[in-house]
Image (cartoon, rainbow, N blue to C red; front, side, top):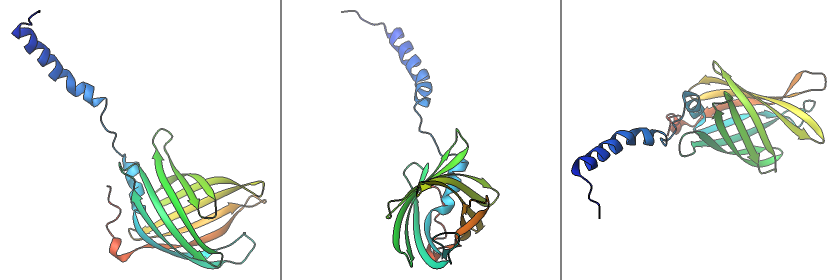
Length: 190
């Protein structure tokens, strides 16, 4: 049996203690960026109302919707559940927002009870969020643009447009969202 000398054990312990913070730093939990935190604006409970059209050439009909957004544990994704009521019936949905720091772009994935899935990418300039998407509808690629304009900490306006065959944008949905009265502090980071 080989006996270690006391000075060697003390030196080894010193080396381990000095290197431990460097080794642990490699495994440190990432933290959300300020861009991630901006998504917190949509956390909490919202009430929406507006008009929607089946196509750009049809008359608009009224709709109402409620949304509840909350952070996924860790603060990198914001998940929102929605319930919309219109003349076309009730539609339930789930949306997940994220920020991709490598591409410097926000992403938006939405799923609903009609079996639809929409993916979009977006950017923020001042108080305006702009999302663009492409979806196949009846064998044709349809381009969409969703714009959210933040009016105050408790309200925003929104508009969804599609690109027409003439190259112009046509509004197919627009309205206003208002944060629920009891929920004015919901945007805080988890």
